[in-house]
Image 1 (tube, helix red, strand yellow):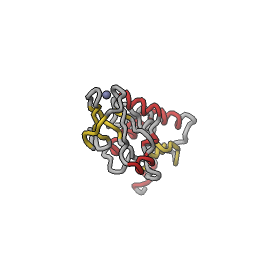
Image 2 (tube, rainbow, N blue to C red):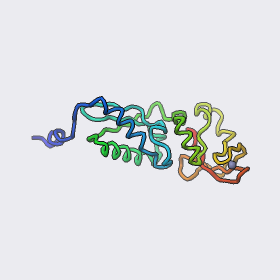
Image 3 (cartoon, helix red, strand yellow):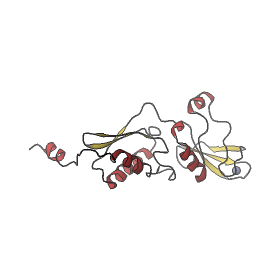
Image 4 (spheres, rainbow, N blue to C red):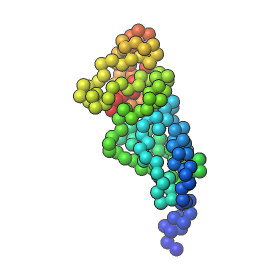
Length: 177
Ligand SMILES: [Zn+2]
């Protein structure tokens, strides 16, 4: 028997149950972004589709942006969570178009960012690309709009470091892409 068939015969392929897709979404909603551990990959808006193909769960994600080092970690975490929930050999694929934008962050995700002390992205990213950097970033700590950018890069490459002029607290701003 060819080696490939031997592997294929033991890859856990099965028919889906009605529970499989909703349960997978629930598992994914508990996989946190490694950079911002209060927001799940679902609230971040990077999970495009969850389906069942060839006897396996198939998850399609759109990375926040290519070259974001967190993407590999996210894929690993998603795979581990799904395997831990009983999905055998889940398949992950990336869909690069349309590109992820911060518009895809859910309202729950924006609230989680705010509570974590990160200013959620404001406005739409398409507008942003026309206007450049946003003029007003609201301080997530005191709500003041008197803020200034200290550095283009915050604690990770996906964030900028800002400081509030009112309460003097530095904070990260999740960059619009
Ligand atoms: Zn403030």
